[in-house]
Length: 399
Image 1 (cartoon, helix red, strand yellow):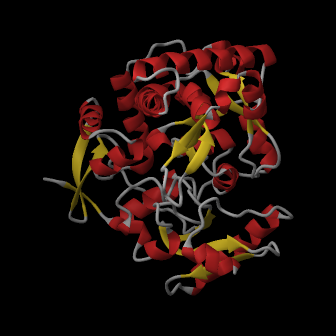
Image 2 (cartoon, helix red, strand yellow):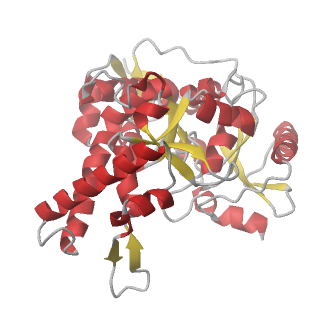
């Protein structure tokens, strides 16, 4: 007999496992509960941690990131920047980032070759790029840490310019600095370290990976972990946090091919389940569902890992997608009640946290959302947060 899981059960598990009803004790525990926190928008890390852990301040997040270094910023799934617990970094590297790095290198070598940089073919461009990367790493080692501007001054080849989309209104010329530095980091040689500026700043200093990470082991953990085993480990963690779910959701979240996803699941003990008529997978032995989860009102930030954890979102998003997502698939700030999205929020220039419920809510829900909005407004204090990717409702609330 097929094991059936209702939408209500999935929502209750989401609330419990994503630490929305019973907060984690530390920022690291909150990160581990989600597998990873989105970090494309730097403010998301702080706001996602605040929603899931007790007594979080920007200082406690900074401590975990920059002093104790228990969580680390890295390029990972879907070529997206995440924050992961330091012990998980080698898994993400082998399971996802190595493939991302190979694609980034091919694309950059092609673009350099087309521009005649390093010669008239891709082989010449590849050699030129390797030489430039070596120069960057020498400069970084000499400095100990550096900004992109400092590395560009030390290694002038970083200021090489390429033309993109010539003849198009959105085209132009840009330095290759960020592409080269991102590639070096994706291959595990550099880490995005201390931030420069406030906690919403996207500017960071680069550090040699071995110097930044505890034990000096680098992102491979000194293990030489097998990519297939790493994908199985990452799939196991994702299923604990986001399962049961369709296998296609795991494939989308990880940025894997269908074959990679199938192999990762085949390496695990999973069982097929029925998700209100949709096939899904669940870790064997994880069939006990929470039946005593307290109602929870939550205001989650733009690009929070909960709404971005699945590709098929109807069971918690309902009809609210057009108001809450931008055209590229980035979600804005959301209001949650009992494991589903019921509205969105934004911070106005005055500092007020404004929200709008997109469906009728019972009195208890309305009161809980209002109280949570007041708590978030107090937590933000003088800080002002504008999501990097603006969405229709967020824009309306701040107009």
